[in-house]
Amino acid sequence: MKSKNIITIAAISVMIGSAAFAADGFSLIKFANPLDFGNDTPVNTTVELPKKVTLTHNDVHNHYVIALDRFMQSNVKSSYADFKVLLETMSPSDTAYILISEKLAYIGFFSLSDYAISKAGDKDLTAVMADDIKHYYFPSKKLSQADEIYLGEVFSNINYNAQSREATEELLKNTTLMANSDYANYIAALGFFRSNNYLEAENYINTAISMNPQNLNYKRLKAEILAQNKQGNEALKLVEYIKSQNLTSTEFVRKTNSLEMYVNYLAKKNEITKKYYLGYYYYYENEPIKAIRTLQGAITTKKKYNKDIYALLSRVYFDNHDFEKALDMATKANKLDGGNSLALSVLGDLSFKDADYKTALKYYKNAESKDKHSFENSEKVALTYQKLGDNKKANELYARILKATSSSYLSYYHIGLFDKSKELAYLKKSVALNPYFIDGWIDLARCEIERQNFDTAHQYLAVANYIDENDFRYYYYQGLMYKHQGNLNEAVYNFKKSLILNPDFTPAKEELSI
Figure 1 (cartoon, rainbow, N blue to C red):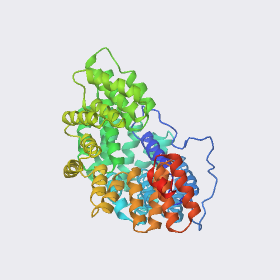
Figure 2 (figure 1 turned 180 degrees about the horizontal axis):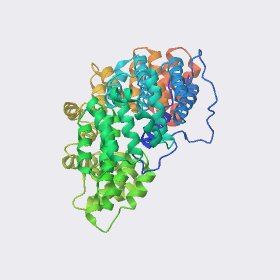
Figure 3 (figure 1 turned 60 degrees about the vertical axis):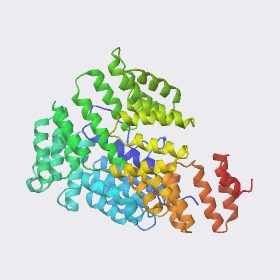
Figure 4 (figure 1 turned 30 degrees about the horizontal axis):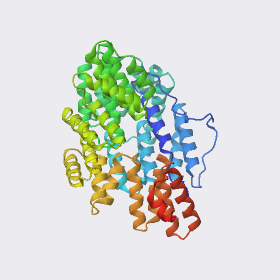
């Protein structure tokens, strides 16, 4: 019963992340091949897209790669047609639509991005990302399909084909488009930027911004231009502006954090500080090996720098399950001038992992007191109160967090679990903010199974399965659906698979009368 309704989320993430950032102003850093999906099988770019049949999961994955590859090779008209057919023929999946929409907006296929958004059936699951996509990328004036394809060719040649100067010169000849399109001026600015002509890049990005002051992608490029042109303070002011614009989805928050670290890397003069911010940039780009290598190279005899370096290393090590090194780095950071919020948070995470909740609470509260502008430690405090049995205190904290920010997917999730009147709406809000939040998808499936809405539950479980195909809860709830449908053999198989993955999972044992 494995779903065919969703494109591989991990693959989409790789392509959206690596291809996007490799192409922009982060030109000093080498990136992974955006078409490398961890195997040695070459992509067959000669395969034709089917015109009438419904695309399965593997078809969607393969044809997405083909369409993107054609764009990168400047075969943009064919790429546009491929993406259009893909959206028309793939099996419906709100999550896939919204993730594809973000990539299409990035490469300038705004009409197709809007079309992908329109195909999503449950706006509660997609509205957050859709708003962020439009606020971040969309031009002020709708482009014709011909103009989108033309500007896509210029964009492709600038970013992927080492023809930034030639492509920009050709674009400037189209005086009508330059006079009427903010996006065309953005592309011209990008071309000059990639050619290291920062003066002209700034002139054209200023024109784009004057024509469309709401577009955050234009301000992002301007921040990079200013930072490269040794105007670091002005660049950082733009980053702060972008951060203030209430981008709430975790993906766009990550983009902004990544930009902030990269601009700091360019703006700072001290080599140790530059390495620290570059390491932080790699952390936000999910490049842990590069982050560790860069941060290790920043460790110095000057202790005032090492506190932050050790703390960040501890976070990178913890997130990569190297708990011994995480403890070592966090302890070192904590010994220097009383530590910092990040190191204390990691020490709390280590205690929490070992079920030492009282010690974890102490660390989290200390971390919270040192960084009052971040709600992540407050979330951890609330979660620890839950583990200690104080649900009332936990709920009060989650509610307080949501009064301060609308981007805390964990607070929506936990309040939803506590308050049945808000459960479905708040669980949807949690995954709308973070489409990779597997707990939210699992509990959404549980809610729909309880309502005997098995088709909807199946769609939610499909997303969870593609986030982590070894999650024992997926097989348990699959088993429940088979049981309700009278397919006892498949139900037993899935309950057993759940127990293989988690031998202590009591609900599966009860279903098997173990």
